[in-house]
Image (cartoon, rainbow, N blue to C red):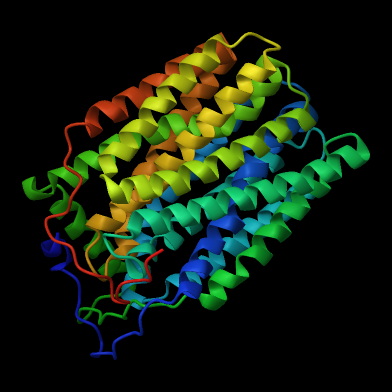
Length: 441
């Protein structure tokens, strides 16, 4: 994989070696997963979609399709700019600045949802789309720090720590939301204000503790930052298409199909629980409290499994579990809330394992000095999946019902598993990151 970095410009100066990675830096990095999970849990997954459908859209039949297309357009925007932003961040060595800007944008747009009232459909969708795009950009940028604070032997564990922190962040936000809703007996816009503030405050340890370990690069003579960044992307994409990098290219293809299924579940899970199984809003929140705990266990446990066995073992088990979850959910009877709790636990374990494992695999294959760009590609394929998975689910749910949609969704996971199984997910050569080996944990 080192030849993929050959086109990079040389550092401006032979900067001194960075000190070893300290546990507090790993803690700081994990805190961003803790912070941004508030947005995806409350706004994308659990509370805002039913609120949008019932209150803002007034129960319109097309609300599910509108929601899916909005999230897809947000991910399309991220898909187009993420590799470019990653290359620019690598050139200037300023990932933390990009991280702060995208986190602030998501937080402010989430706060603004508090002012959206009944009938203001396009305002609501615009704010959700804007906040979602900023959320996914921040997720990609934060992931770009992983190769700098881990080694191939610890990437799975550290990625798992981050996802585990994330699930506990979502859990805390769910508990606060439940307290607010049960206190007033109805979903309240103040929940969305709390979510935006939670994201902003919880992200502060990341911006304070995490070190920017990349080194700035000298621009080629006569080239602007924008032109040089586009050139880096084009060269890396061409290199990614070479036969010697076929494994990574196929992994990204597997990631695309699998993530298409996952993003659809995330976007419509609360609507399925309320509209098909018969959960009330407080009951949905309690269901997702259990799911968050299962997700934390999945991310943590499968992170160790991945380091002890191989990424393929952990990811294959996670995808197989996803197929089972979709099939059981599609036939779960209305009112069978106990059975659906089992579905939620399986989904949480599979989600934590898959998200953590996929990020760690990309870290294994990332050349030194190109983490922002390569995690931009990770974001590119992940967001391309959202452009496909969420609208397909929304159209199927609007036209044929949620049960058909969740059953068809299982084929995304099957396709990802079929592509993954023949792969040998080991880079040709591995080296420690610039920070040296982080402490074993």
